[in-house]
Amino acid sequence: MSPTPTSVVFVCKKNGGKSQLAAALLRAIADETVEVSSAGTSPGGALNVESVESLAELGIDVGDEHPKPLTPSMLAGADLVVILGDEAQLPEDTSVPVERWITDEPSTRGIVGMERMRLVRDDIRARVAELHERLRDA
Image 1 (tube, rainbow, N blue to C red):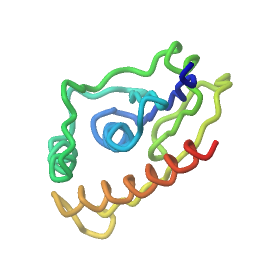
Image 2 (image 1 turned 180 degrees about the horizontal axis):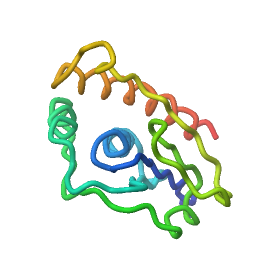
Image 3 (image 1 turned 30 degrees about the vertical axis):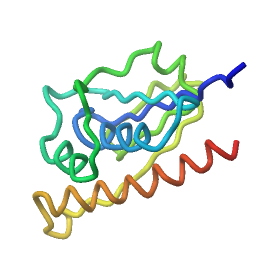
Image 4 (image 1 turned 90 degrees about the vertical axis):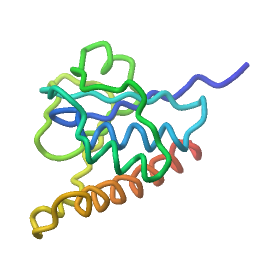
């Protein structure tokens, strides 16, 4: 009998960039023991093009992903929720473990465009790798 998958939900405000990056990066390194999804507390209309391009540079295709709203059933089915940034807020009655990752924001240093996105991606990539190690060791 195979182990029950661990369900991780990545959340940000728009679900167009950082949470999508994190989800795609974890999917790329995890096996079937990890279920990965992402959502936004106020989803935007499309994925961030630079996020998608930065993943493509690593050979990761986001497929048919699109911004989607965080639902109560996503929270109820999660073993861990990871919030990226400080804009997204969860309901106070959330009973699932929650981590908040305040990621690097190169634009505050005047770094923009793909250079910015690569730095954001690499920060999230390191955090995802560390999370993956914790999940494997659990």
